Length: 491
Ligand code: PLP
Image 1: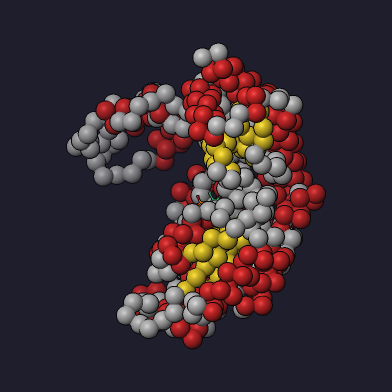
Image 2: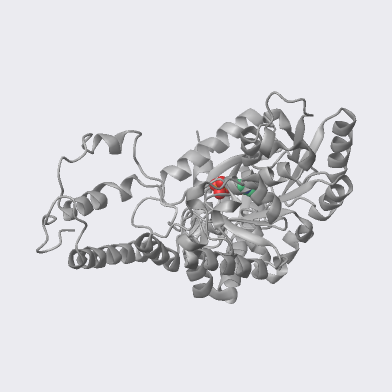
């Protein structure tokens, strides 16, 4: 990667000069272009041992400036081969994601502008583009356009903020002002299904509710929250002197993409005056596809909802949008403005840092703006539809083989399945066999799958979500799974 004619920075402590920047920049854009052109150049799951990269790098920081071409050489030599490639078409673990071209280019500009939009005045464009793009996304998902959206790093943060607002909505308890400790308060409780993401527990722990502040509600045969059981749990808690605070419903659970019955849950919340937060981190964007709109049925009644464009909307990590119909409570939950952040009276603007813990706010809306404009509604629909088709195709392959079974409906772009030769019933043996299959498949370096447990049964999980994943990758994954099963069967 040596850049001809450039060897040393001119002086210590001086930033790269513009001519140098252009030359290295062109070089890097070419590198990224080649990387995107050959997304299978490296193994999806690297063949590295823990500590291997560290051992290959000097432990000491450089005493003086290093030639930047040497830094780039080291990057090329060491980093991609020690990276798990989420942008690889064979990446079908967890929830597949895409760092798309427009998103990558936006990240370059985000770093160049280096805007820190804590206040409107410290980032007018970032603030207003955040308002615009989160509004666009609402329109695309057919959610109420009056909701206010802010962009956070992750869904875990967004859910934490939503539950902080829910806690604030219990205004008689004055928790934001007086705290929880040392006061004679009822125990607070959040309800979610047994399948809800662990970010709900973490939010409850952070907000002082403790792990026991989360009551997990049983699910039906399709792993959706049982709304009658929710109602019964809330009534039981009330009778025991517990104060219900919020319900978190999920649209597209992590394990099996189940969709909780939000209309019925919204009824329960309305009857008990509870905050309803919807975790649509993965599944929400599916509602952009006309035939998938039902996945957000009832969500217009939510008090808050999180959706992650960095999961299934081609925006590079990180970008999570938190919507709320009750922005005043969200702001009150975090209200604290020191003198040095005060703005002139009469400057009636939105200040993004009012809506959460983080003061510093990255210009994340730029990548959402680029991505939505680049693909447009029709492009997004076409891409999501294709992922759903590929998952359905894989589900069909599983269904067509008597020694495999599916553990979840493939309603989105995820299939959970397992090898079950001759209808085996020894769960421990099935788990061992399937874990071995997974290990063998992942050792190929061609595809990367993950696992989960559905109703206590170990399953292999295939999630399509990368724009470069084609039918041949999904078919190859199936081939590798069957080969691994056959090898294990043969002992
Ligand atoms: N909610 C759901 C349904 C998820 O699947 C995940 C992660 O996969 C999260 C929340 C947490 O997302 P994040 O990594 O953005 O915190």
